[in-house]
Image (cartoon, rainbow, N blue to C red; front, side, top):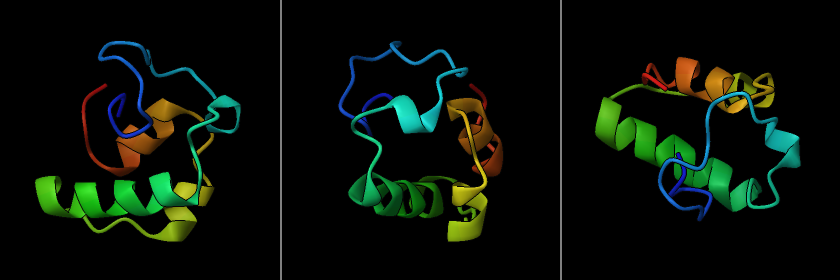
Length: 66
């Protein structure tokens, strides 16, 4: 997730609010959907992403351990 929003590895701990991340934008959302689909074979809907508040919420949607 760090790489997706152009932060050094290990920067995000999970409790960060997505709205507080300057790099979390429409391009990052599209990239997240593609990355999860490719790497995890999980289909994530825009609704699931929009209802996510924190980084941990997103990782849960993507079925990824923090």
